[in-house]
Image 1 (cartoon, helix red, strand yellow):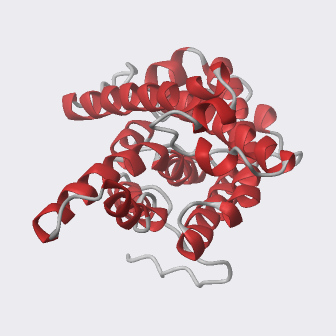
Image 2 (tube, one colour):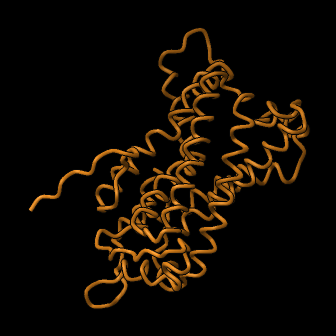
Amino acid sequence: MTSTSTSTSTDASQPPATSDPTGSAESADPTGAVAAAADLTATGRPARPRLGTRIAWVWVLLSSLGIAAFAVVPYLTASLRTLAEQPSGGLAANYAEQPWPIQLAFYAHIVAGGLALVLGPLQFWRGLRTRHPRVHRWTGRTYLTAVGIGGLAALVIAPVNDAGLVGLFGFGGLGVVWLVTGTLAYRAIRRGDVAGHRAWMMRNFALTYAAVTLRIWLPLLIVAQLPFLSGGFDFDAVFANAYAAVPFLCWLPNLVVAEWLIARRGLPGFRPAGAPSLPSQA
């Protein structure tokens, strides 16, 4: 699932980041020292992630690369109209006849979302974070820029999605939360809050990974309908039923698991603005 990858990005024993009056990420942690120190053991050596964590990260990396290629490459090699005329027209059939601003937003969402999907796992690669903090920062900036473009484009195309009102609120809600969590992740690192930044990045990538979990849920939901079919198999009807469920199912469970991992790693949990902090126990 989405959140299994994000477990590689965190460490429960993190030194507090120092605040900076300018709020600059570079001045708060100019060489990535705070983030690197969070990954060191008591011996001064980089903490080695568990085998299960490494396997999960590799799975998420490979699945992200695979879905990014599957979702992006066809739209870079053929027009929407050409793709719509193929038997497996996919999303192209819905957007081929839309006005050009909608088509432009669709392309922006596909390309930016694919880029975020490729770069996201790298943000949770401990080796990159500790050995090459500048590369980590620049890939992070590129990732959040892609999230911003993809999230805004999602809000434009959500009203014309294939799933109707369910898709409008499901995919539209995903776009809003995607933008909000990305903004909060950026604001956290700007003020030197490394732990908070990691927590918000885990939530954000859980939403980015919805591109993968959507394509996992769809075949499962199609197969789940087979025992209840009567009068023959109508793929279009079965697919429509499955697609009506994924606008929420592709991302809400991801957030739940991400929140569980955040708590397990001792990172700051979600608390609404103005909510009182729990008193510490002696």
